[in-house]
Image (cartoon, rainbow, N blue to C red):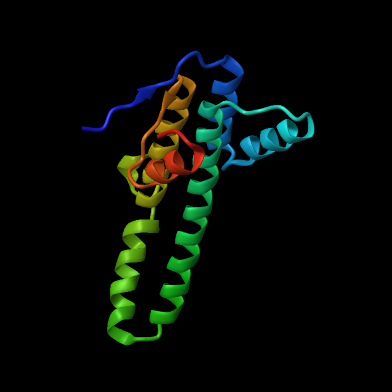
Length: 142
């Protein structure tokens, strides 16, 4: 069973920076890392975990979208596959009325971002399968 691990004594500024890092696709956290490097300050494990996770998720999402576009362009020339790709694209990218006008992909990403912002603001180590395991290993939070 997966559970959210609470952090020990997290400062309010760490919660705010970690939540902003998810909302800005990692930019707030990246700027915080630069500021910490300039002033030669260490970053605690809670904040480092969330900054690195937000940057990793942003890069992974960008790569996923670019690969999706590349595959769509490459297979759009084939007649039968073109119809299937059009159907898939209309399911993922077209607005759905009961989801407040969001597409399915937008609804999923918005839900994940809200989850990450809320858990980081509550002082918890949020968990996303596979991604969080990579971040824990690389930041030393085992």
